[in-house]
Length: 181
Image (cartoon, rainbow, N blue to C red):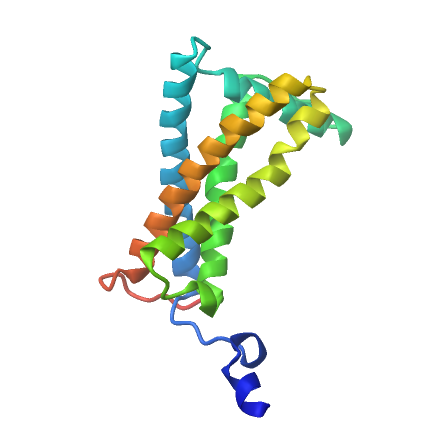
């Protein structure tokens, strides 16, 4: 029984070779790259549908303004607030994922395919929690809600794939010095 417990990383604790700072930094870089990739997919998709390029930002801005109004904070919604929210959340959530990868032994040393799958799962799960606010706060009709979630699935799939690639190759890089973390 003791041998089984000693082999379990949850019981004995993991020893990581990746510093917190390195994990967060590569997470930020992966998040920025993933957010830019999402921008490109979004702009292409919206243009193909004949919709204005700022549609997503406007919707996000309206949701953020509505959320903050519930807290008594008045903000004007719109594309600018949406773009700021969008471009802050991607890198911040990715930095949190990079921190997790740096500290959880089971996420380290995985193959590229597994790293991408883990990052996509993270992206899809975390984004769903945030995305649920939009149809609720904006009282979207069912047809718009389905389109919102379908489009968001593709967008966050893109973000997760890029995040997985950047973290996999970034954390494997031998040329970067380890920082104390």
